[in-house]
Length: 117
Length: 114
Image 1 (cartoon, helix red, strand yellow):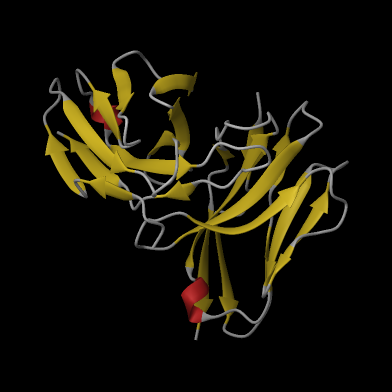
Image 2 (cartoon, chains in turn cyan, brown):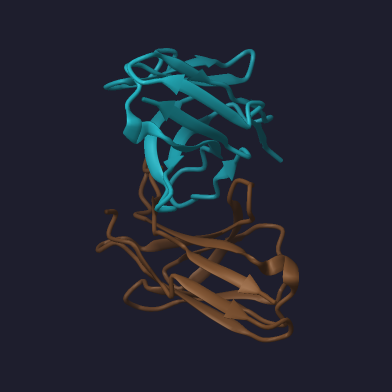
């Protein structure tokens, strides 16, 4: 079984500053994917960024980047130049690689991020 | 917008009743999964349907059941509702293919059991 832990229930950041959200996970799998999802008040889960465990290079998507440390089972999200629209719950999630067809995501409990004007 | 729509958006039911939640998948997607998100928690996987067959289930009792239809829309049914079933229920659709991992979520149905 996999577990995902987010140790920061809430965080805040000034607009235009940088913030890092932490995530650790536990698994016996060697091949897997890690994700950060954003859930704004509209409730819809939106994929922010994805990391494939077999890739050593950290994923980046515009202002969002990750620090993936496979040996430490750590997967943090860095948001640069924070914007008011980044205010949301952020969930770290894990899925083992099983070929096509499995979308059983394991989520952490989330971090509530507030961007302050 | 992801193209995944759920109905209704909100629902209030009495303990012991039965409820049906609906999900319309994104066009072209053949896989749907359902999650329960209790207040202040992350979503928990309930089950997944692929081509109308259940092909994965989380730690939920049999009173949680589902259907997937030929057009790939889906229903989540919960019998004998309990107070702890109060939660946001999320549906996610995907296209099952090698290397594909992205699930597109709907906006959820907020179920309150009183």
